[in-house]
Length: 212
Ligand SMILES: Cc1cc2nc3c(=O)[nH]c(=O)nc-3n(C[C@H](O)[C@H](O)[C@H](O)COP(=O)(O)OP(=O)(O)OC[C@H]3O[C@@H](n4cnc5c(N)ncnc54)[C@H](O)[C@@H]3O)c2cc1C
Image (cartoon, rainbow, N blue to C red; front, side, top):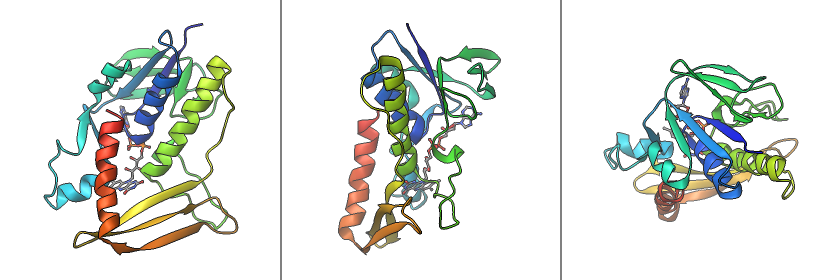
């Protein structure tokens, strides 16, 4: 049966979900991504926009470009979400999905990225970060594919993540670890240096090329 997956948002989580689903699902299944903005922004580079090291164009891509990959892009304000019927209203138009990514509370509805709040055993929440939106998106794309095709195994998000920490002067540190470790996250920090800054520059290039 042909299915429609509505992916709400055009940020890190939504883009990874849509692109990974397009890769794993046959063309008869529709992937529809909805965002009010025209462009996807690679948020970690906003820092370099502020310092004048990047232009707005350099750190963003038109969401419409996803159409080249077979993803339908709808631009508009999402004004209501019904997680039970999986219907959303966009600029007065109703879109209906067999699966909904983002939102809460019913089967076939997945919440990922900054919209979620995940408490950790240590008493603090999981940080809101693109790296987690990315990993959660891969899990959701895989699980929806499994539900539709029966192929592969379902999986779950393991709380692993990593992050560059810019300290200025062309240097950055790097931390990586498992935030679900108990009793407290286990994160290894690497001393700031030139190579982590260039690692982030490479990651920026990878991101904007990989997903658009
Ligand atoms: C300055 C800055 C630096 C950052 N640096 C890092 C970093 O180094 N590493 C890292 O891992 N994370 C970083 N982050 C955090 C990271 O950007 C977010 O965690 C990540 O983008 C979350 O992805 P998301 O898909 O959940 O949401 P978002 O990327 O915020 O996307 C949400 C999308 O939903 C759309 N939307 C919202 N409401 C509606 C509506 N009603 N109708 C239509 N569209 C709507 C928005 O237009 C947006 O495109 C940074 C954030 C900022 C601001």
